[in-house]
Image 1: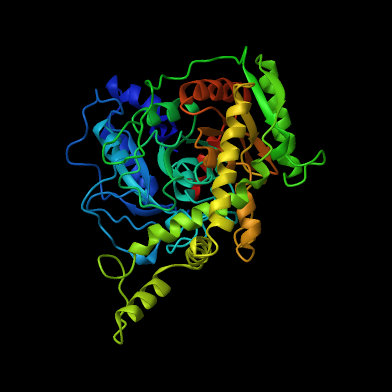
Image 2: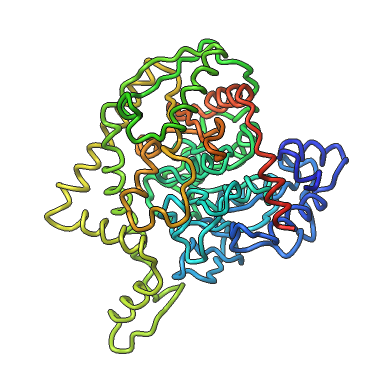
Length: 484
């Protein structure tokens, strides 16, 4: 593996500023890796470095970034993993991507994803499944699996994705990297192709927490073009904590199953408990906290998110842009054929679920009730954060499962989001860091904090990450060697 691609992104920034390497050299090294893409992590890769590279004194100094295909990029295919948008080249760029470019990042490629971000395995993409770099017979997680696999596999120094119910944190866990879901509103959604507007949020994938803080600092900010955008109350500082003295970590029994660990694989639970012991060794106190409504989060989520998707995806009708399938007999026939052929099975399933939940006579019983549960979940978190600093859980109940293992059972697939969905419904930030291996596959540890506590959350995750000492360089080296 090239020495250049062994550097963390922050190290690369420092080396470029010092004149020890050039941004163009770094871009070319990563572009070579991305173009060799045997993980199907990319849907588009840049032909080459920009003619004019960013100044070395810019905050990100020309370090390349991979971008989930849910973000619009001017003149570059932005397809949301869907045939209905195949080949679509938007006339504008998403705010988050533009912010990174303004800070000196260069666009390396667009990453594969579950169609319209609907999935937990990246098997729902119209462009084929992404493969996990740790084991190519297994999924990388979803929906941002392409971004996670690119970073874990060494073909990008960092990447961005979106998280609606766990779509950054879960693939980060399954691929052995860091993934941050910020507070809802911290990053602009302008130019993000919508799935569920009250839940979607952009965030970074990185090899370590320091890189996550650096990338996120240049993603966040208020945007007048997004009415839900609030920005952050203050700047994101580089994480420096070396211990967890005085930190209270809350373990919610409501999310961990019964004493036998029902719902959480034994190896995942063992890793979680071992990480708690490491946290105690760093000075943290471990306390039990209550999230009584959290077990209902998955049910509420799979009413709210499909309902919002039903409304958001109504615009894809073959009239204005995207795929159009001829329906000569009537406009309605054209709509039906276009949507029938353009959307995949999972998108159709969720649109139908959402339309039903919003239908007259069912709204109060389903969607309205789910909104009430969401309010209760947010109240539970607020009460818990009055007693503890952070809430911790496994990120995913299992390690990466085999391709095809759950595609025939949607409920089994949805259960992969069991530990991540509550934080999404509450709109609070959460981060997944690698906590070790189970049967040779990565396991993630999730920390969640109160709204807009990203700086403290990153600091705590950094201290814990250092103590765990997880190193994913072996799989990056192996993946690059396999790619030739």
